[in-house]
Image (cartoon, rainbow, N blue to C red; front, side):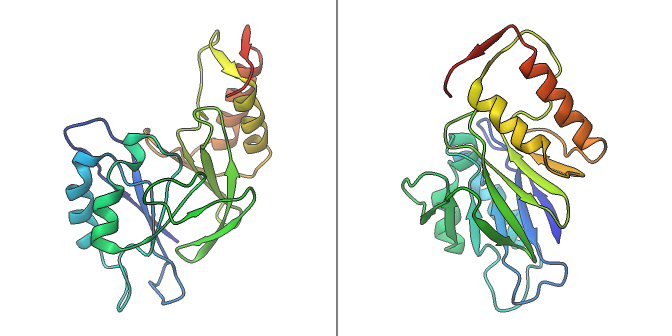
Length: 205
C-alpha cells in the first residue's frame, strides 16, 4: 500500500487529503482519495493527482471516501467528480455521495482492506478507516492527540476513543496534522485518559 499526501491549500481553510494506491498499481487495486479538501484548492488537488502514476487503463481516482461532510474535507468534491468520476462514500448521504457506510463495513483501498469505524464526537457523521494488516488509521478530524486537561468532551467522543484505543495502530494519518508514525497507541491512550479525566462531559454529540 502506498499513501501519498495531497496538498489541498487554496484561499480557504482546508484539510489533509491522501491518495491510497496499491504497491504495484495492479488492476485489482482501488485508487482511493481520502477527503478532497475545500473548494478553492480543488484545482491544485487535481493537478497533483494527474502528475502521479496510478496505473494503466484505470482512473486515477476510482473512489473517494469522506471522513465527514465539513466544507474543508468535502467542498472540492464536485470538481473531483467532474474530473475523475469516482464512486463516493460517506457516512451520510448528501449531494455528490453515491453510497453511505454502515458500521463495520469493509472497503478496499489501494491493495488493502479497511474497516469503517463510525467515530462521532467531532461531528455526528465522522468516521475513521482502519487497516489491521498495516496497522494504519485514517482519523479524519476525530481528535486522537489531545494533551490539555479541562476541555468539554461528549460521551460520543469518549466511546469513539475507547473503540480506537482497542486497536493495534502504528501510523495515524489525520485530517490536519502531520502523520503520527511513532508511539501512536500510547498517544491515543493518553488522549483517552485526558478526555475521560476532564471535569465536564457533554451528553450527545
